[in-house]
Image 1 (tube, one colour):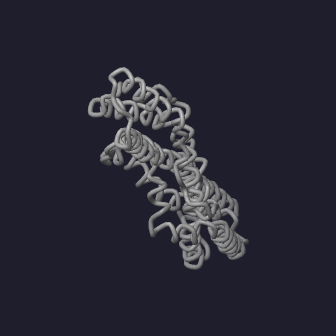
Image 2 (cartoon, helix red, strand yellow; image 1 turned 180 degrees about the horizontal axis):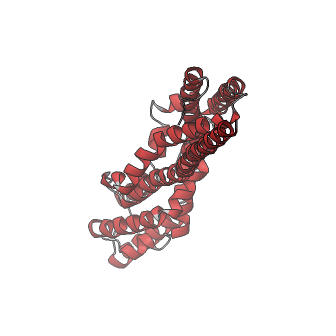
Image 3 (cartoon, rainbow, N blue to C red; image 1 turned 45 degrees about the vertical axis):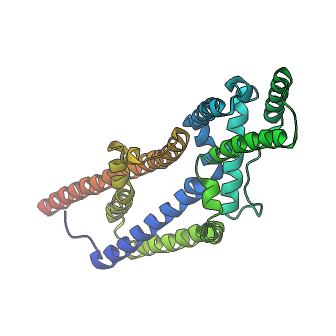
Length: 300
């Protein structure tokens, strides 16, 4: 292919345009997915994390029944899978909204233990009556302690994405400052990118057939920055090596990460292919234009 017109200034503008295109895409993905509360709430169900969470609580209560002498059925009588799922999602939403600066209320678990407590108290009191145990101060203190330990353990399991832990950490202040300004950052990047592309059109306005090459190069290089590492992580199952003590946490976090990765692969795969098509198209145009120029020279 012949040397392109205005090659040096166009190359410099193309490099800067590629950098701002990469930055724009990164900010858009952060705004639409990485810092999107709805996406993480949806992930809890789509990954099966809420089902795994229910199973973990059920298993824990089964183990807890042995040292307390209270049958597992008493503990799990009021345990409801839908209620567990709703609580986990609600905690995730409130935690992320607080961390991303969309809410001023600190996150906390909102699970109603009334039925749970009543079932335990009813069983223990009936058992005490049958065995003739005296219901003194120590007796009720023991019941309260049994319930308190179980509730604390159950409450600690709902943070499947560790969002509450992050929201209450020192790093949350950084997110609360950055996330609300993402829209402004996207606007600035889009404006600068538009100016750079406008300059490219202006400089090469007398040679429009060169523009498919420059746009193809822009799409090709920009998409490659995201596509290559995303493909590596996805097809090597890189994040499967993350060690999580609980399946519910593992499912939620890995599903959220792979969801972002899959979307990056889809979008940048399309841009990558479009870039190749435009570069090939520019080459084809060049071939036909060279042939046309040669045929004209032979006529003269």
